[in-house]
Image 1 (cartoon, helix red, strand yellow):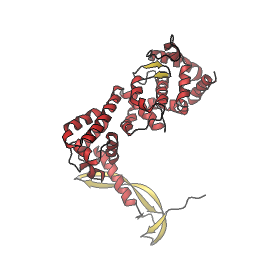
Image 2 (cartoon, rainbow, N blue to C red):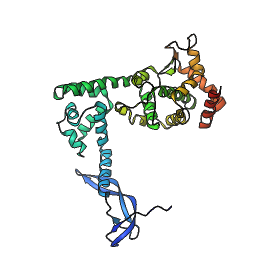
Image 3 (cartoon, rainbow, N blue to C red):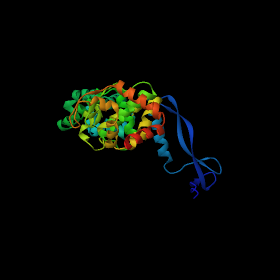
Image 4 (cartoon, rainbow, N blue to C red):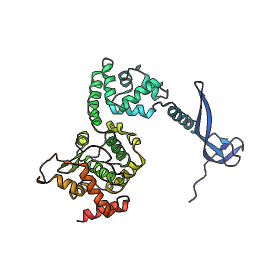
Length: 334
């Protein structure tokens, strides 16, 4: 079925005509500085002139606003909303907590662009729970005790995040971005597989943390503590919006590794992934001398993971999804 043509009234042709949405650059001077913005325009299919269609002006305003903020490195409205969600603070309490006037955040949410100074404060609070704690303590007397207490409880939990390396945070962020649902058990196993495949394809581990040989497979203890409240349920909490965009620090080669793991191991649930790790030498060797249900904190060394996956790579070729799927199938069928 052919798509219906978009039509609207063309003031040049003096009738309804079809139009095509295109992009074009415009120059705009803001505070005595010239910018070039790329906006959407509707072009008449008959005369080639621009048509004013419903909603396009609003879209252009949004496009210019977004690009201006990017030019000047200013936080977006979505960044501010995210900060409110992470720390469970309303507009006025957040304004006061950051040391702003009471209605400052309200004005920003309505579209007023923050100064660079205030934008930097918001961005720092968004990326650093420790900085947010500092601002909260500085302005404690300006906000309600209940709001202060709730925010401090969230901050204390979030600070645990920064016991994890930046590389680990980036990998977790990328996994969250690519998969709709991730349980703590599934996350632990995916991190372990990422480490193994990285040792093969990139000749180095993805992160420096060691995992331990727990009853239910390899576990990174600091990651476990961060998400333990979710148990076997998917990780869903606005607090972890702080992970957003951390994946931007990953290199192309690192993303290739994580994509391979997600597209192969990531199609299985946590219990199946646990079963796979229970069949692998690194976990089995670290568990020697322990009954199945006896806890242990024995380290699964990065070197043992590397050696094991290098050997398996010679058999299956882990540079492709096909090789990884063959490996997984072979383990699950034995």
